[in-house]
Length: 515
Image (cartoon, rainbow, N blue to C red; front, side, top):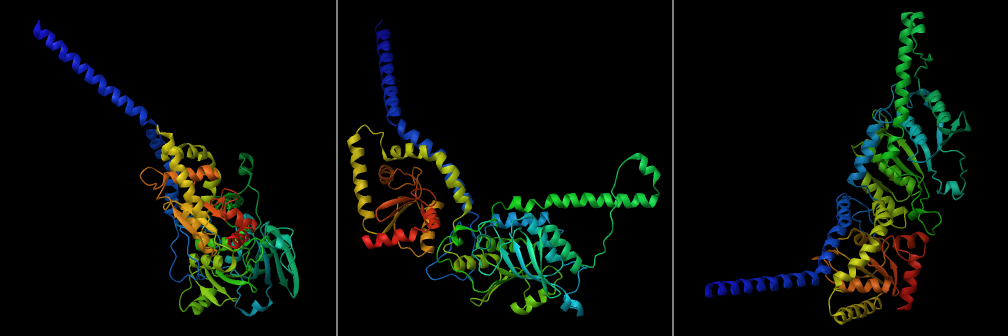
C-alpha cells in the first residue's frame, strides 16, 4: 500500500509538472502570437520585394564610354535597355526575320547614273511601334533608302499638337513626303507609300494573281499549267496571310514602348532641351538594338535623319569610313554636340542625358506601384505596428518609443529641404535617390535598414511613426519642406508625378527659401 501510495503521489507530481509546462507554453504562445503573425505576414509580403529584386537582375550595364552630364549617374532599374528588353526586341526581330534586314537584289541602284533622277524622301511621319509604320520602314531598308527627316508622330507629340514650327500636322500616320521630278508629293497610309516605293525604287516584276478556288469541278476542267499557277498563287496567299499576322507580333512583344512621348520630354513641360538640327541614325528595321534606339527617339520626340544600312547596303562602307572600320548598327551622329557613338545602351543614355529632363524609372516599377502596392497597402499598415511592438502588454512603453521616433523624424525633416526615408535593398528607394541625383537635387537620406522583413529592418518604431504622421508605411517616403509628398510614384503626389506636372523643382526651391 505504501509503495502504491508513493507511486500515485509521484504520478500526480509528474502530471502537475506537465500541466505547468503546458500552461507556460500556452502562455508563451499567446503572448508571442502577434510576433508570430507579424513574421508570417512579413514572409508572405516579402514576395513583392523578391519580385522587385528579380526585376533588378535585368539592370542595364553601361559601358565606360557613356556620355553623362556632371552630377548624373546611371540608375539600376530604369528605362535604359535591360536584358529583358534585348530579349523581347530580339524575339520581335525573329518574328519578322524575312523583312527589313537584307537589301533586295531587285532594288534600283542608288549609286548608278539614274540615281540623280530618283525621288528624294523628304519627310516620314512615323510611330515606332505602329504596325503600318513598321511595314514602311521594312521596305525602306530592303530598298536601301534614306529619309531626310523622320518625325515622331505619336498622338502626344509636338507635330500632332502644333508644336513643331514650319511642319504640317499629318492627317494619317504614316505619311511620306517625297520630291518627285522637282515637285513635292504626299503619300498617306501604308498602301500608298508602299505602292510609291515599289514603283519608283524596285525592279521586281509584278505578276497577276489568279484567285484560287479549291473545288473538284474546276480542278478537272483546267490543264496542268493552269493548275500549277493556281497552286502557286494559293501558296502566295497563305504566305501573305502569315506575314500579315506576324506584323502584330513586335507590338505585342514590346507593349507601350515607342508608342507615345514620355513625360520627361513632353511639350507641356517648360525647358525641355531640343536639338536645333535633326540627329543622324544609321539603322535597319530588323535589328533588335536599332529598335531600342528608335523607341526612345519616339518617346523623346526627336526628329532624325534615317540612313538605312541593312545587310548588303552601300552605306555599310560609308559607316566603316566614319567609324574607322566598324559597320555596326545602330550608330548615332549628333550634329548639335559633335557626339558620335555606337552601342544602343550608350546612345539611349546619351539621348536621355541630352534631350530629356530626367531619366525615367522603369515602367515595371510604375506597374508594380499602380497595381501591387494598393493591394498590399492594408496589410502593410497592419504589420507595421506589430513589427514595432504594438502587441506588448505594456502599451505605455510602445507609445513612448513611437513618440521618441516621431520627435526624431520632426527633427530630421526640419534640418534639410529634402529628406528621404529608405530601405537599402528596395528598388523603389534606389530609383528614388538615383532620380534625385539625376536631376541634381540634394537631399538628406535616412535609412531604416536593409528591408522591412524581420531581421533586416533596423528601426521598426520609426517606420510605425512615419505611418502615423503621413498615413504611409511604404518606403521611400520623401519630405520636402517638412511635408511628405509620398514615394517614387504614389503619394501626394509622389516624385515622378510631381516632375510630370512640372511642380517638383518649385517645391524644392520653396523649401530652400523657408529653411
